[in-house]
Image (tube, rainbow, N blue to C red; front, side, top):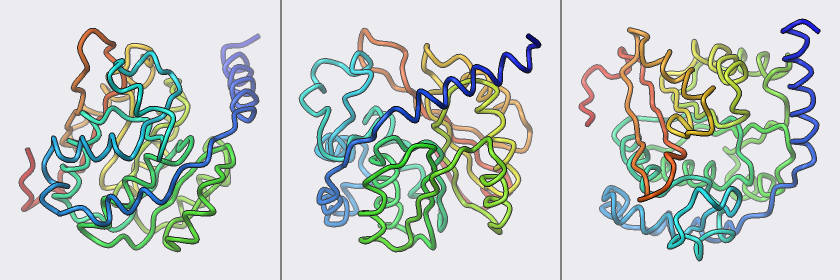
Length: 258
């Protein structure tokens, strides 16, 4: 079997296994915690980190979370992020004017909903698009609350995804967190890169995701981007997760970021 045929065989097996996964419903009532929070609390790293814990974390790959966070796992919005990383990343985004958002790979939808609700507190989004190959039950419920939020249930390696992205004039922010193989991550980046001003990637520091780390390293070497990393870790674990944010340099004119 050729290398290309072997790759596609693995991809088909991976997609088949993914379709057997069933996302859980998330508690959308908790979005009120973001909508009602004081702006100062949303801009303070420790306060925002505490808020993310109240929103609830995912309980898959539980070994990646420190024991002290386990009571927060498997509940609420099921955010699949490290609060210590996600809080700093979101605060950085608040300093930018973001009016459109696309997230590739949403699992239960909690990180997507959290990002949308947070961004809306600073600059109203024109639209937000969640993408996953697996049906996500909470997206219909969220769309009924927020009509600007769409869900595309499709395979990003198929022609429909590229065609839909091509119909978008531009995207302020894209977050990629789907399949973590190097070829898949790079292909998603290449489809979206021309239309996105900001590109974020999850698992750029994860020891178990060398493919994502490699693609992220390549992006950080491209001269057209200014890159930031949010990779704080919990003691005696990992490294796990990690968020990388690449911003086109022309998008940063007149903007001061830390």
